[in-house]
Image (cartoon, rainbow, N blue to C red; front, side, top):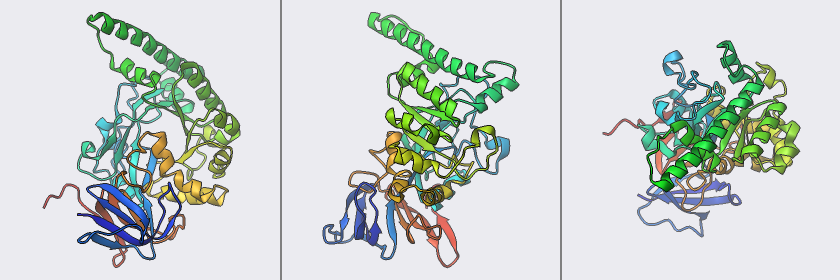
Amino acid sequence: MITAVTGGYVVPIDGPPIQGGTVLFDNGKILAVGPADEVSVPDGAEVVDASGSWVLPGFVEAHGHLGVHEEAEGWAGQDTNEMTDPNTARVKAIDAINPADEGFRDALAGGVTSVVIKPGSGNVIGGQTVAVKVWGRTVDEMLLRDPVSMKSALGENPKRVYGDKKVMPSTRLGVAAIIREALTKAQDYKVRRDHAHAENTPFERDLTHEALVRVLDGDLPWCQHAHRADDIATALRLAEEFGYRLVLNHGTEAHLLADLIAERDIPVVIGPLFTSRVKVELRQRTLRNPGILARAGVRIAITTDHPVVPINFLVHQVTLAVKEGLDPEVGLRAITANPAAMMGIDDRVGALKPGLDADVVIWSGDPLDVMSRATRVFVTGQQVYTFNAETGLGETEDPYYRG
């Protein structure tokens, strides 16, 4: 059935806001977005009155661990890092996601409808990331794209993990060397593989090298965990050396190198921003970082790194970044169109426009106002979350129920 969300203050993200606008969708896709006098609502359509409310696309979390680092599960739900090998490029986050993780329900309450789920930063090369919707019975039903990128880590985390084991890498020198060695071997592997194909001779495949060849070929961006400015400089150096598409993740001290990052057109996924300074790498954490980077011309997204910060607080991080100088429009793009484009899923999500998935969120008011809340959430055209004003509780549809 065609659904029409009418009368609201529509913020398409890719265009100017529309007072009293209409969003029309059917079969999981947006059909039309525009003023009421320009979008005709067909007879028999389900009409959702959004008068007095704001209507936005579902938010996109560019870096989280929903379902692989489950809440309230302890070790049983902890599948973030396969910390037995510093190079686990062959592992895939999709294989460890539990859609029953409570974080998925929290995401809906915070207006988040899509998330890029990544392995952790315990390894130098952590593995392949995946983009999913936040509602469904199985990750296969929720899938947007797999894989989306390759996760890698510089700095304290991998040197601590393997330093404690008394094996390489135990220093930043060793961490960078592991990356160089892995990518050099992948280059050599590609030459041997391509030669074998050309000669039509047998060839033994290697999943680690195959995954890294996709990075070298430009199919997968390299999501580089890096906090300190020196580690960010190393990330830039390695990207220039091997020619892959770099996306900086966390970027706690990225504002110190904003001009260098902007010159290279390197996007930055910033955050989490609500944490205390629990380690040396976070000494320069500041809510001013997103605004400084954006004003320098850096493309930014903002992340909770869930469960480090609960995913439903994604928009609140933007609010406080706006308070510290980030332009509000850029702030909303940092959790919609920007992360979608960085992760290669902007053909599906990140804005309200015809042809994209009908991930539509109705807010009680401006989502950057901490008193506003998501009142109705549609994922791929299906209403899956409603805020019950009488009980003061959010109600999520059960994806397992087939009554």
